[in-house]
Image 1 (cartoon, rainbow, N blue to C red):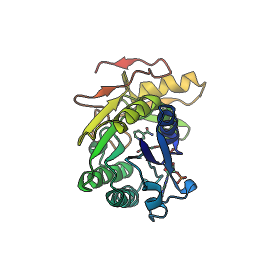
Image 2: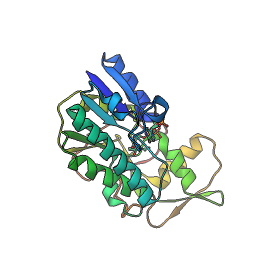
Image 3: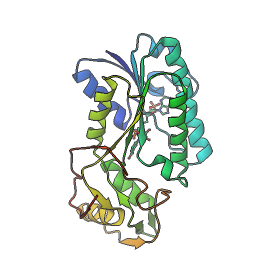
Image 4: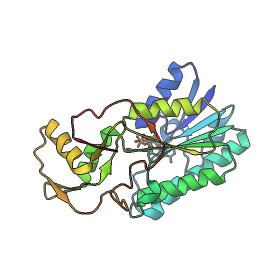
Length: 247
Ligand SMILES: NC(=O)c1ccc[n+]([C@@H]2O[C@H](COP(=O)([O-])OP(=O)(O)OC[C@H]3O[C@@H](n4cnc5c(N)ncnc54)[C@H](OP(=O)(O)O)[C@@H]3O)[C@@H](O)[C@H]2O)c1
């Protein structure tokens, strides 16, 4: 099968490209470095010629809601218009669990607009919502650092290994369009403050972790970013021992 990965040289995309090539499929990479700009549309038509499936794992550093929406909805609309012209039969999007329950997070506002653009585009689709990646936890700690101490609430996180995300994306991309959203989370659920405490200790990072009230990442409530219903579970454990919370 011929598959175009938009963002195929990124953190998720490069690993997915390797997995699909190892399974014997033809993989094209859609990224600016590879001559494809999903914002302007440059190179999209050529990249999509003869492609059956498109996987979108694009990313942006925009945190402002209007800018994130312009990127995620704008790129999706351009990509899926090109898919309709090329006769692509399946669009797969990677999104985030609880993205619609974190209304103070401008990046997530953009991801919600992206999901809506996928559903409206008229191309058969599958949306995979994953929780935060294991290797994203140190970045969260950095974001929550104020004057050298991490200010972390006890809200819930159920992080997943990026290789479990790659496995589910590959399986879904090679199957029939789901026409629905599937959620994927890691095998254990943690309090964010405890997870960061254990992670920093394992790295001999001297930052103190102060437990605060409320939520982080713009989440509406303490359980906003964990799956609240049926979901798929990743197999790979968090690489650091931390006290889990019962789901
Ligand atoms: N981090 C998490 O915990 C987490 C959890 C769940 C879901 N996700 C989702 O996972 C997805 C992938 O994240 P990631 O960490 O793999 O991203 P990443 O490493 O930052 O990669 C971003 C990719 O987008 C490409 N790109 C950016 N702007 C582009 C443009 N205008 N045209 C074409 N390509 C463009 C980049 O390539 P060039 O620079 O060459 O253009 C790169 O391949 C994101 O949508 C994110 O929301 C992340």
